[in-house]
Image (cartoon, rainbow, N blue to C red; front, top):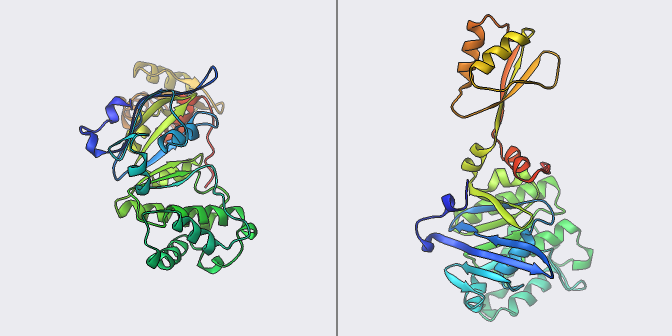
Length: 322
């Protein structure tokens, strides 16, 4: 789906909008004129191979890096001009959390909360306890941060982002270092935040996570957005294939050609594979094969997945591990 097709009718419906956003390091265009559209209330997956420009984009959205050209709006405010009004409404976990190593998790969060001029010191203790509980760190609240595992540090970073209610949460690889149980807990946390009305912007290399929690996504390649839209629209944009197993390869090829397909041998002596356009139904193929007395050992439709689209657009594989 093209960026324009994904754009809501009104800018007030958007949590993030960029227009022609670019970042140049010396002569390298790390981000090359992107138009990013993130609807309010969405769980938005930001996908792309390493080095595609995802983290650079996030840093510009948060005012951590200046743009070379283009414009940014976050929560309806122009950035970086509106930085001081926007940032109190935004929680972020970017490029891994950093903490005071010899303070406990609880003490670290208390310090971060105290540094926020918008918070009330009288309710700090309750806020810290609630944030630790939401990420499953209550049992380790008084443990020194240097003794935390990588996964526990990720959880503490999430707790810091959740110290106060946020309209927008920006997470860069939030499940990095987490075991499967921790990954499931973060997934459930993201869903609960979205249910409460928070817009969640997630950069991840784990396709399974994006497919299970996100409502929208964008795919980056070499600094450019090559697709964005709802997850259903992106899946439907992926190329589908039909696989036919039969001993009657010649007859089956004739039928597929007559239907406008281009069959090829792939994966076995009795296997034909063809790209399947949307207008050709699998049941039509099966009926025509039977009518031509082709003996069918198997017929399967594949593709049309987010992974297929990613590979087609970037030319790279995708880590699908959960």
